[in-house]
Length: 299
Image (tube, rainbow, N blue to C red):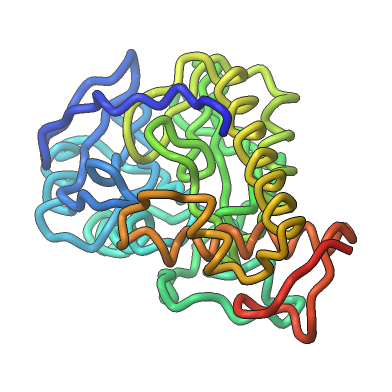
């Protein structure tokens, strides 16, 4: 497999505000996990009249930390990268306390509803933005502004926010410095994810701030490594099919040797996402209905 320069050295103090850069602060929620690293990092851009990016999970300690840290300041915008439960729910409590409007692409599954997809239950199904945003929109505040970059793949409603004054991109879960991104169908879409990675290669952002973990300081090289990693997974899948290994559960046993048992199901979902994309391209054929437990073969 390709070599991705992951950084696992990130440290934080929960419920404490940290100065990350000029005009940028962060508060990390106490929700560490195998999928969220040390926890959700809520970013605060500006001073006095500020934007909050990914208010985070509905944890009273975290919500209280945001409100306490910004006491005496005004939250003029809440920007949500996507609607998983560790990113968006706290925005409602922050809005209730401050009146700060919520900006997002749309409800969980927006971008998939129109084709009749039923999305997974792990999303924030109560999320409805006050202001719907789309690719290319500009959001302006007091001394700061953002360009909205629609990056579907992890979820269909995933948005990155390009902080124009700092040449930095808040990447949510689309690109993270500590791990690859989970892409789980039906809302997760590998073809869309790869297209969204390639979209970033056409940009000139100098720095990425993911919602989990630390900054990515060489974003172009990092994105190329992520693309190479995904391409290598497809090669592995084709090699499995060449040997007659046509079930996803058996592919994962070969492709992810020594994998933590807790990560086996997510790995199967990721391989399924690859297979859906490869089937749509005509590289793979499916016996019967295209589903995770189907038998696959080379086309």
